[in-house]
Structure formats: C-alpha cells, structure tokens
Image 1 (cartoon, helix red, strand yellow):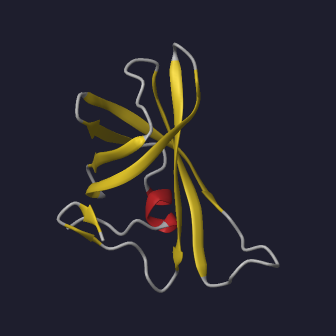
Image 2 (image 1 turned 135 degrees about the vertical axis):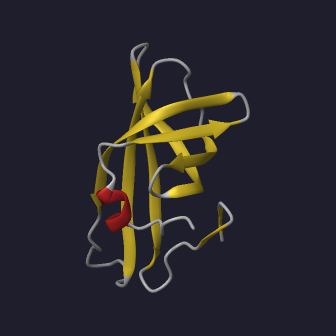
Length: 113
C-alpha cells in the first residue's frame, strides 16, 4: 500500500531516488528538499502546505505534467511536477501540496483521490 503523501512522509525520504514516468519521459529524480509553509495571518488555518523539490539530469527534460512516481518505500503514486530551474546539466522540479490536515491525499491503487 502506498504511503500517505504528507510533509512528514516525504521528509523521511529526503536524499533518496524517485522514478518518474510520463509517456516517453522517464528518469530518476533525487528528492533534495521538503519545505513546509506556515499559514499567514489572512490564510485559513488547519491546512497542510508544503513543497517537495527534486533534482534530475539535464536529459531527459521533464515537461510540466502528472507523472507516475515510484519509490522503494513510498510505493507508487501520481505527482504533478513543474520544472522550475535548470540547464543542460541538471533540472530542478517542484510539486506543491495544499490540503486540510484532517484530509491528507488518499492514495488507492496508485491514484490520488
């Protein structure tokens, strides 16, 4: 069964490899950073807000999209990745999470519900 997609869970696996696949695009990515965000004074409380950052090779470049991710401990799940920086040597990707803490994204059969 896939692990919950929470800041705490991703933090446990910082520094490990994740495999990303979308159609012809496929590569291994390193989870380099997990960054939590505090609610501002005008924002709703009770929300889980965080980003996960991955580093990957310069080739293949992964365009923005929903990727099938796999990890030896977290299992398989889908993740919307956005390229945020890079050059011919390496690219950096980000996935943003924003949900009520009482309702973490459920993963069933590799699909986020």
